[in-house]
Amino acid sequence: MLGRTTAVSVDLDDLGCYYAVHGVEGEAARLALTRWLPRFVDLFETLQIKATFFVIGRDLEADLDDVGEGAEVLRAAVDAGHELASHSWSHAYDMSAWDEARVIEDLRRCDELLREVGASPCGFRAPGYTHSRAMLRAVAAMGYRYDSSCLPSPAYYVGKVGVMAAMAVLGRRSSSSLRGVRSFLGSAAPHRRTDVPLVELPMSVTPRLRLPLIGTTLLGGPEWLRGRLSTAARELEHLHLELHAIDLADAARDGIDVALPELASPLATREARLTRLLRGRGDCVRLDRLAETVVGPAE
Image (cartoon, rainbow, N blue to C red; front, top):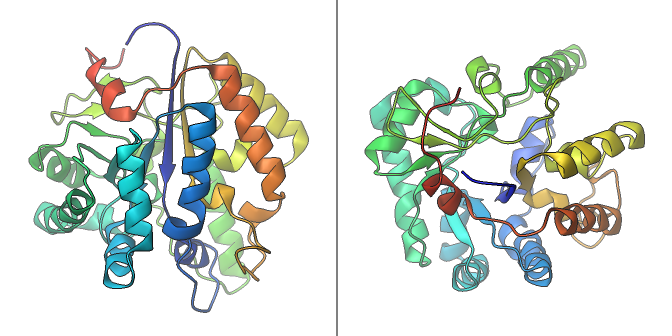
């Protein structure tokens, strides 16, 4: 990998994922493919950015079984030059506990759906950033070239433990898993793995404290922290910015009546912050193209 690089990826987690993580009861509308994804496609067209979208197979399957509106947006994204990659079919937070055969079955199901909308998937991201060796072996067995499941931020993992503990005290149960602590350790630089024949494309963190530079922290949260993280993101030699579809959600327009922390800031504010950050970084590269430039293991 040569010179200053920027990569943008978007996890298309739907509203039900957030209900599950935050322990919220009730049926969640399907919004990621039909409401939130088009906003990203439009914004990226304005900024002339090519991104990687990680698609959940079960949501695409449900959309195809309905009117296929989200599938058409995905097809248009492929035609516009964006990459579609696998975020698994089931998006099960306990997938890291599955055996290799079960993971392969899940990945194949998602792979078939992605190809149905015109994609040629070669990358994977685990639900909740939590991967295992069996999962990575399954990804390699699919013939994929890269994994992008690592968020090398111990601080993020500690924060997740604290939030889940506080929820338990309040009698709420999160679907998140505390397995896979190794997903939050290791090199923050793109590298070739030595355990499986895959390139690893971690999400970016700050240089010293290893705070996560992801949409959740860069677009929302307290200003004193967000401002420092945004400065760090602008100054990194290599930035892999991971976003979530909900980063461009609007509670009022989308009919979301649950107070989710991801929506604490207005959509216009989040969109303006994202635009400023990406314009300051210059050209972006898709993850499949980035993986082609990685020549050696992490130092």
